[in-house]
Image 1 (cartoon, rainbow, N blue to C red):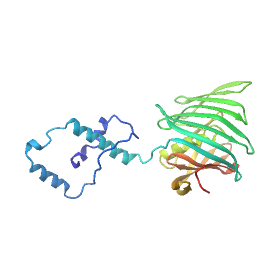
Image 2: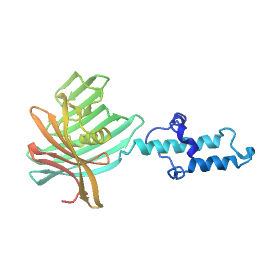
Image 3: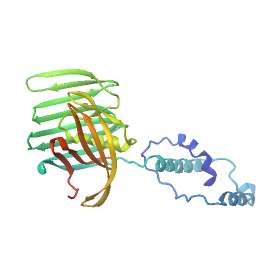
Image 4: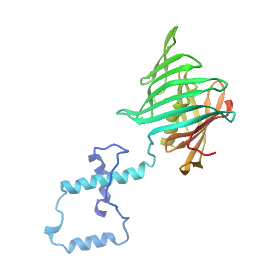
Length: 285
């Protein structure tokens, strides 16, 4: 296997697989000093008929699988977690509602679905939030059906640099077009389940920088990453290592947002300005 080392990346082109695909290959121990000499000596002691004269389908296939496995280990430490999650919504330390989310794969990328109901100072009921993202977690399409505090359906379709927004109420409908970044995150007002995409993007990208946020139907703003730390969080299944991001969203005034992510998924969201917290139900106090 040591003889393959110099051609490892050249073999990737033949795999025909996508990052994130699971590959199982035999365990490969690290080379030790003297291995190369041992291989040369061993090969010299063999008859020419026992040496591999040219690559075969078997050897090329093994090289492809093992090379891809090495590449995945070296470059893709982050793997997006899929499935459903439930949250409790708190206001001023008191539980006022619940939130449910689901993250799944699609042919084009990712899908987030969510619903929420709260009875705090501003009652909110979102019966359906549906968000589509491409493989890079760039927002592409959104629909939200809200019953409180507004009875409205909002649709957003993102093109290369333009977002088409439809706002439909029982008595009227408005349609508008606005400029948008191609890598925007769809974050409708009060729809906290949409922060699943923020958690995914933060976990996927390098620390720091900023994120474009499309706050439907208002328009695009940005969030700056002010700090990143790791913390141990107790859950019903034991302690986990979560990443804590401190953000500043540019709203009417700069707004602090604290977000904790667990393997690319939303774990906790704190909005200190309005004293609201969204905490996954398996998190212990």
